[in-house]
Length: 387
Ligand code: GDD
Ligand code: MN
Image (cartoon, rainbow, N blue to C red; front, side):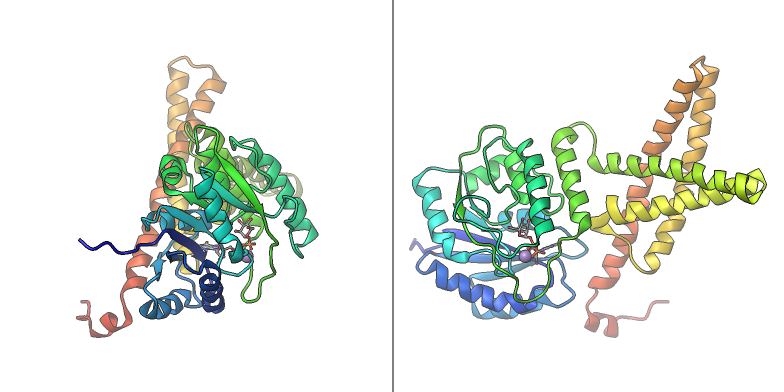
């Protein structure tokens, strides 16, 4: 059989609203990679600006380019993992679509990886010769803080673990990929922390360029996701980090409940039962909104689904209260001290609330939405009318 040259390097590029960057990015990449056989896999999370369509158009002309188009999913790290697994190239690069990473370094990074028998070569902003460019001061500080945290979970010396620009070997990927959390923005930390042995790694300095088109997706919640990632790395083998977040949100709900109760009772003279109803509803609603924004950020409900989700949340949590009361009463009857009985009720109802709302509030609705959204426009027009 005649052998053909397949890709030596797969360049995996997560995208969200990067339509105007795609063509210049591919051009720059082609210029930088020269004779190296490569392929580009964009992983797009259904960008509203139609990034995936733009990529599909190009890939009709250029077979080296393709797109993994994900529906109802969000997340840079999980997008990178999917892209890496969608290729069989022996070397994989991960970089952003916005031209902030320096593609001209790729041949050198690949060469080092091959000749020095390394697992990963990282494009670094913090080693000598590299720079944060015109990065805002607060982001430099934030980046430093994140760096300190991540050094505690990675089994290697690294100056820029927050980098989103690196090349790795497929054997290394396959060795660590089952341990990857895929939460949030920091895929490199995630990969390194999932390795059970010291990682063979080198860094190459580069200058972080400014964005030309579109805007950064980094916001305050990316910080929360980063904490979630670290949590998963530390305790993920025992408890799910989203359960921890859910419980923390729940605990803040108890504080809010007591505060609202207190205000009504001591300042407004509201009768106890009525005050309790208002306090409960307030706490549940705020809890729901916080969980929707933080714990389930990747599957956040929007528009009318918020109202449906909220009602389901009320129903699930009401059963939770019942479970709490009944368990505590039963444990008390069995001779448990009051605090143990109370705690047992609380733990069981939290597990119930978490499990049920995870399935019904934040998952089922997405499915209904998914079916509606993915039905193509033409199919909708010609479909047999529903009775
Ligand atoms: N598929 C997908 N899903 N892609 C995403 C998502 C998402 O939810 N969020 C962001 N992206 C894509 C963007 O379209 C871009 O191509 C890339 O991921 C980086 O996003 P930016 O919003 O431009 O991030 P940044 O420039 O602030 O930070 C980046 O560079 C830093 C330096 O390397 C990130 O890669 C950081 O992790 C990194 O520290
Ligand atoms: Mn960027």
